[in-house]
Length: 300
Ligand SMILES: *Cc1c(COP(=O)(O)O)cnc(C)c1O
Image (cartoon, rainbow, N blue to C red; front, top):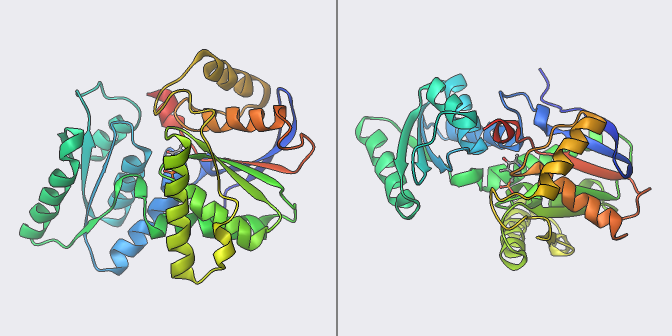
């Protein structure tokens, strides 16, 4: 079985045409970039000989859902530490976590690290070898998954992409794509569109991931150049939306059948349209929108 996701040509709204890399269709329930990352991260976990996982996330975390599903596929124990102010009704990703029957521990944001440490100790004391995964799957394997995803793209098409847009949160996905495009499509420019962080903090995080990655992989130091992190479409922060964003999601769905979500991919698409509107990127350029998923965020 192959995990290769399709590339679709999409004509929508004011855009002439863009290509869409459909990682929303990545083969895991709910799809998305966290599925691609989780595959790599849990391969590391099992190759390290571990048999329980501890990770964390918000109540609608795609990372938590993808990790929980993979753990069940692989027969691993799993603790998900959720930082939430109050327990919400079961919907979206949370509903799937409950259905999967993984261990869910709620706590305040400030206590996440301590509660995760306690979960690690709990599995050890029960005789397991636990494996720790940072929130969002922010780690080398997560970045590697996206470096390799560009290799997948290269094997799939001869198109010489010029501009690539992706929703950027912790920055691991962007860092992997950035290095991957530098390596496999050196003429392409990757634009990370912030879903939350302001420019400086987001840029530093991507740069740190890129620096670590080129260190591990012995890649060219020039890959540190041209990191683009744009915060102009973040709509005020994580899970914040506005009327423009919601109407864009509707109009993209209506005109193309592509389903975006208000937390991640809608913002990335909005950012992409702004780059074209402001003529930073030509509308007739070979543009790739890397769709990272988010369906369950839309449904929550
Ligand atoms: C987590 C997430 C992102 C951001 O990925 P990072 O690697 O954290 O930058 C983008 N889109 C979706 C749908 C996500 O769940």
